[in-house]
Length: 159
Picture 1: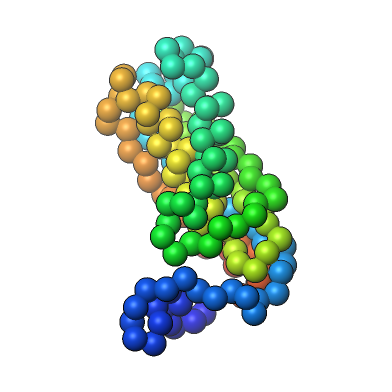
Picture 2 (picture 1 turned 120 degrees about the horizontal axis):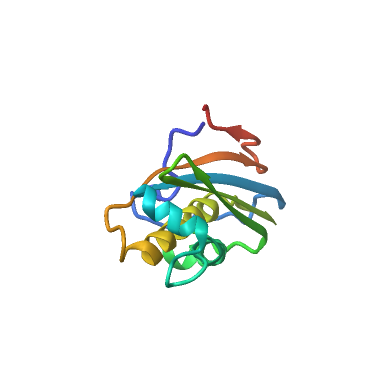
């Protein structure tokens, strides 16, 4: 692990990292997060009883769009040509939805930011679609689970 922050130059000024010398490799990142809500809210989501429509279906599309727009949102993030993004939403218990995103590319830089952004946008979409009935929802546990590819190789979070 490097002990330097790569987004700052020798004078301490922010800059976009030069990745031109890096090899193009297949890069994969998986991230997750959860949104916790009232049990009645989750029940509405699962039964399709939400006036705004298919909450999970819309959140899946939003997560994919979030991954695609990451470089527009994170100032020093490189635009990455994504080759695949999948977003899975699963109910946990009576009050939680977990979002897991996998992002892939063949390129010179990783897709960790794309996976993390996608998770957050997917969860925010659930919040937006359900806030009329549950303003107290909380998002938590957003984290990188695993990354593969590039010079640093394979990394996996400790459970």
